View (cartoon, rainbow, N blue to C red):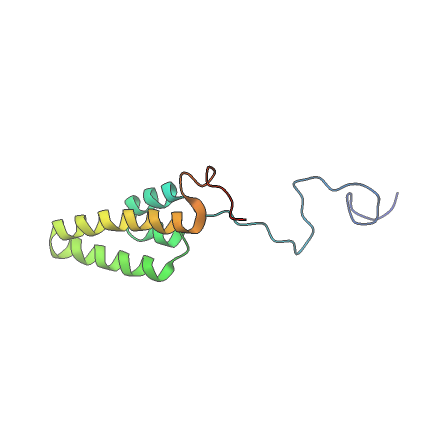
Length: 106
């Protein structure tokens, strides 16, 4: 028996479909608009962070917290706007509800 690890290159065995060679990067899926909206409901700005927009996440989070601190209603309105914006931000990156139904661009 050789000292090589099972499935190592050069031993003639096929690698399983779930394993990757060292250095291979896993493909990143596009963010889901639904997940972004739920995260934005839970914590202001988290939906934007999930959608890959950290600067927008910080600005929305700060604006919403200041709105809640000043008076309840402005914070509530900003929170609602943030939820919608987070969903749209994720959808614009290809993760909308109908992403599977959209035809691919040729």
